[in-house]
Image (tube, rainbow, N blue to C red; front, top):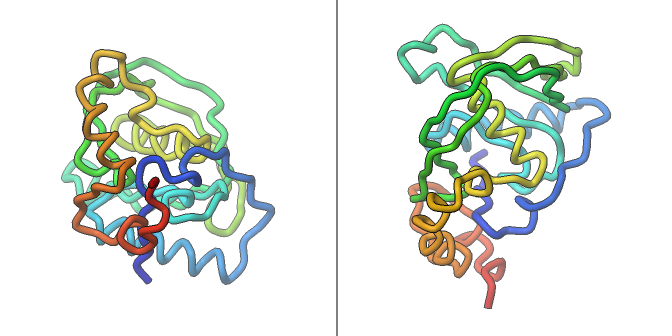
Length: 187
């Protein structure tokens, strides 16, 4: 089932998500819907708060990118970054902030402890685009958006568009909270 994506200024995107205590059939259903919603919106990562669930769950699938074609989709529950290495700057965008992009500096590689879709603990190293997407989605679990990480000059460049999104002026090719729940828009 395709779920609507929450948009910039929606309260759920500003809250720290609560840890999960386990998984069940409803978790598997949510994960499936998150992958379907992410792919429908041409995304490569999606965090549960973006679809209205304030829990520490995210999905990633970068296999649509040529250099990551062999990387299987990833379900990440209760992530905790153990270490960070290097740094790089890259342009980021977000399904919850449609039409806005900006350069964000992030660590180039991470070591991540998390639970998988079976709630089995994993520890793994990630680098490149996979590390970036994971950090971006983990930010969502902490109530942070990529625009919160922009340098002041970069933020000023996109502030007008952010104000439009906050006012409910959203142009997106996928279902979103402002068309499904227009009352979520500020007066």
